[in-house]
Image 1 (spheres, rainbow, N blue to C red):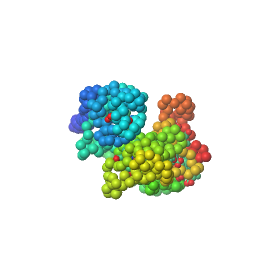
Image 2 (cartoon, rainbow, N blue to C red; image 1 turned 45 degrees about the vertical axis):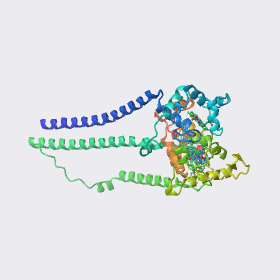
Image 3 (spheres, rainbow, N blue to C red; image 1 turned 90 degrees about the horizontal axis):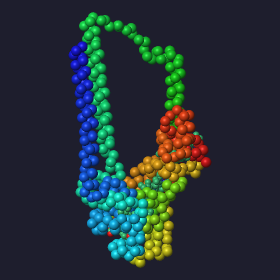
Image 4 (tube, helix red, strand yellow; image 1 turned 135 degrees about the vertical axis):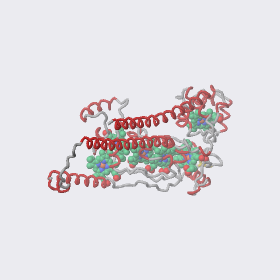
Length: 438
Ligand code: HEC
Ligand code: HEC
Ligand code: HEC
Ligand code: HEC
Ligand code: HEC
Ligand code: HEC
């Protein structure tokens, strides 16, 4: 008995030690990362981390840090102008130009009088943060991939997940071993004390017991029926699947280059997704806001697929031809050849889908339904768009009730009815045929 207790204490000590090591290493990593960012912030009088978010959301459509884009490269722009000038310029550059500020007029002329958007909503502190971010040193090519694409951050969390899983597996293994040891010792004690085992008589086989039990047979039959019904239903839900559909478009337009490498916000081009049923495809005038200035492609090439700089530049010329833009005179000729984009996502007429309801009201990211658009060289249909797909999400997603009085009220009533804390779209009526079918 003494031996057993000793063994148990040893095992639990080992467990405790293991858990402590795991938790303390992750904590240490986090702490040092925090310390590192704080150091940089102190040097520049702004928070480059907050600045990066602001920059990506507001400026990245037209500015890069190290290269010319629609606007000038912004690396270290705080050295070029004083703070007050930058505040004034970023909040409303046109006002400065109109006031005849020599620096403002000079840069405005240099960039073919392109109008930089005004940002009256940014505070001086926001601007300090953005300027702090512009001092981020150019990454060394080998390290360039980290953080460049949107999906970068995922690696860490899967690593910690794996560690957690591994330690859980270990814990279970130890538990099993402990149990085995305990039974073994108990049996030994029993033997030592001369207790005799009760020898059970041979059981009837499971199968014959099953056949003789009518209730069991009945239950199994029902289960089988339900399962086959479920699969048949799933099969019917598949009708009309166009997943992966990627037609060739009249102009090779790359989301990877626009939304990915150049971080142009989806809403810049698909602005109606937030406000209306349809997302819509931008008119070519929207393209020309930038492409009056960008007449050739100087970004990354993808030689394996034949996407060279010349190929991409040729596609920009197709855009010029379509809108009737004459590069030599920098003016429109009036001869237009409208582009007919091939529609990719298309629900049948009898189904009703509303973008603003999902994007604005429910706050779902475009990527949840359209996949990693910022990595798509050629746009394709990512989700099946079947009825089963819509309904699955409605079953699984909880309604976001924050700051919505109407839902708050409905929620209180319905959660009483269902006796739950959280409500799925399904419980709110998201499975009613009439909601999606005219
Ligand atoms: C719609 C495109 C666009 C957006 C968005 C934009 N800019 Fe600009 N920016 C320009 C253009 C174009 C110029 C060149 C001057 C001109 O033509 O008005 C410029 C010039 C500048 C300059 C002067 C740079 C120099 O070297 O002289 C600064 C600083 C600047 N922008 C900061 C910002 C910041 C910060 C943001 C985000 C909050 C931003 N810009 C968003 C287009 C844009
Ligand atoms: C610079 C403009 C621009 C930006 C920014 C942009 N798109 Fe697009 N998008 C287009 C054009 C043009 C098309 C039509 C050509 C094509 O299908 O590739 C399109 C097509 C699409 C389609 C397919 C439409 C169909 O026919 O079914 C989806 C979905 C889409 N975009 C989603 C997005 C998302 C999500 C983002 C942000 C990550 C985004 N787009 C950013 C211009 C843009
Ligand atoms: C906010 C600015 C902006 C808008 C709006 C914009 N582009 Fe671009 N476009 C760029 C930038 C930046 C590049 C990359 C240039 C480089 O890397 O040298 C580019 C590259 C291209 C290219 C060559 C690469 C490729 O995607 O095949 C084509 C073609 C093109 N754009 C077409 C379009 C069309 C069509 C639209 C309108 C639907 C559009 N662009 C709207 C900024 C813009
Ligand atoms: C809940 C899923 C979902 C989300 C979130 C979503 N979409 Fe869609 N999107 C769809 C479906 C479904 C269609 C097909 C609609 C149809 O045929 O009526 C579609 C169609 C489109 C189209 C083709 C033109 C049109 O309006 O039919 C574009 C462009 C598009 N989406 C862009 C976006 C952008 C940009 C966002 C983010 C702002 C976004 N979508 C968010 C599901 C979604
Ligand atoms: C990624 C998850 C997701 C997918 C996929 C999705 N929805 Fe939704 N849907 C939601 C959420 C969340 C809401 C709740 C929005 C709100 O708060 O009003 C919603 C609400 C709705 C509503 C309003 C329901 C009501 O009770 O008022 C309709 C109609 C709807 N969706 C249709 C569709 C259709 C049609 C599809 C498939 C083409 C689809 N949805 C795919 C998440 C999704
Ligand atoms: C959340 C939205 C949603 C709800 C709720 C919904 N449907 Fe659908 N339904 C769809 C969509 C989207 C399609 C088109 C799918 C496709 O093209 O494959 C569809 C297709 C169908 C089809 C045609 C199948 C085919 O392949 O042509 C039938 C029939 C149908 N639904 C019946 C119903 C009935 C009955 C209900 C109520 C129990 C219902 N739906 C509830 C979204 C919904």
